[in-house]
Image (tube, rainbow, N blue to C red; front, side, top):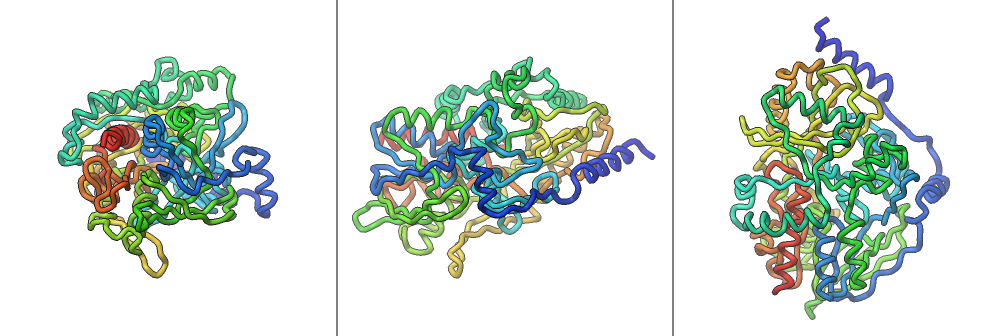
Length: 536
């Protein structure tokens, strides 16, 4: 048998034998499950305070754009209410606050009972208010956060600026890249303490896969580029030394790091905002609709939720200024529904437009040696390729598999110009989206071609798709667009037709951040935009 065919068969047999086809937690009634979660994370079961009936400013969401907005408003002396549907999760060096995505329970997912991730292994569990919302649209599943701190709790930590020419191609001149490069990217890097992976972490056992990945791309003629990361390296050192429960060194990230290894927004922007005494986050507050009354005040309808999903009541809040930071899907849903129902009648024709997936593709190729590869989470490096469609491949761990497979994973981000539009369904009151399968296939093919070429030139022991893991084409963790700068809003996020209403998150970005992770650009744009709004 050819060695590649042998490793393909062996790899598939290993996964099938060790994981099986379905992973199911023991069934239990709602009460025992609630008691179990309460014993593990009692903090999220504390009584939830009610948000004030009126606030000078309300921020919806608590992710990157929302957190920046909350801090800068508070520093300007504006009393600000932050509404977040998810829970405020603590950190602890020894407790298992979050679940893992190898054998998840309800702490992992926002009120759903099953999940099939990039490994294509279906899993089932009890419903609970966990940290990752998997929203299913026609043609694409969107991964988004449901927790105080938003996407900073569930992302893999890489924060990378795009090249100027690719940024300008996407934004078409509506944003000055030079301004971001000289002022706002550096500001965010300082606030989030971004840094590349230190040598001692890179050379440790959990990052064997990172070194092997870099060796392969070098063999294929690329020079790996170090990634800036939000991880706190001293926490990883504590894990390696046995002074903390392992998390970031054992494949924990997509569903949170229990020990606070990620320097997420709860540890910086949101905390600094709270320290001013002018800003407060209200967890368990799901925003259902927004409107504007005859006096010009904004009206926000919220449902208060227990972590179990129980409805604790519905209220109507008002504010003078309303800042949308619920992410591409959340912000777009609110605006599209408000336009369709007449709650915000002056929104223009661009509301709902410009959605894209940032060209996300997940890939795996075989290793060049049989030794175990490690499951360290932070991404050490990336490569850029423009032999065809411009794209980046980023070193990744393999989520969802708790044992070594000998595979090396990559997250691909392709410069894709495909865009879709959110639409309103009057009968259900829902907001939907159709994503092009043909366009997604083109993105996958572009990334796969580069990954396959690397595998061939590096002498990988198995075919790049041998483990059944290659090219999960049905998801994005980087939803962007729906209320795009310069179209639905002016160049700084002020929504056309409704003064005092602002878009401050990934919904403002036209579907792509130029082959890199969006988080740095979302945060920098929020810094830029709120500075202009406050000046005005």
